[in-house]
Amino acid sequence: MRQSEKGRPRLQYSVGQTSSGAWSGGFWGFLIGVFFGPLGSVSGGEGGAGIGALSGYLTGYGINDD
Image 1 (cartoon, helix red, strand yellow):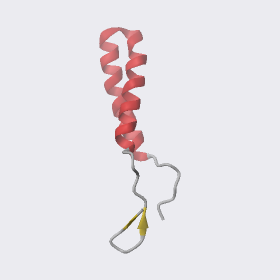
Image 2 (cartoon, helix red, strand yellow):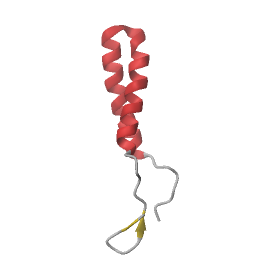
Image 3 (cartoon, rainbow, N blue to C red):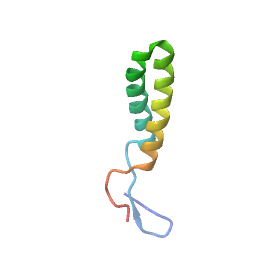
């Protein structure tokens, strides 16, 4: 927990949700893309990493920050 500029408590996550989402999405995108050949694995990994990073950025752990 940290204090915000206004003195209110704020949660600070120990794991970056965006980076963990990108790694997870890249991994699963790569595995699914393997079925479509070398180009599919590369594009699947890139697309999965992008979608995973976006979903990691937009989600939380279910703990209210207030």
